[in-house]
Length: 174
Image (tube, rainbow, N blue to C red; front, side, top):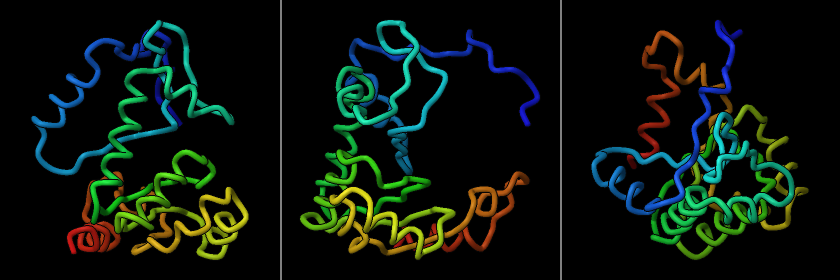
């Protein structure tokens, strides 16, 4: 339960100018893991100042209209096509055709290794992928790590180091 109300004044308006420059500057000044959040955001306004949600079946066209989101998608695609990369996916349902296409291409053509954190059982995950969008079916060929835990089990509130976190970190290092 939240201790305070989310106020509309907390919303952030996404930039529309010099997006690539700003993102690249931020990435170049950061050493360590790079994190790109593609979906599921709340509390932002589009670059034209309107309330914005990217949901439904036309996500790809909504993303392409927003300079920052469009550039994030390009970074994601470039990372996957760079070859020999590992990706940690948290809570993705494998229902977005455009994301599944990129993941599948990464697995089949560029050696992408997928590590997945999900609360789904292996059977439920396999069923969902195999009976979901047709681009998702062979993505499992790239699965190298499966962690069926809630994030709070991996990263508890007291910030103690868990076996799960250590296992994931070690798997991503190999």
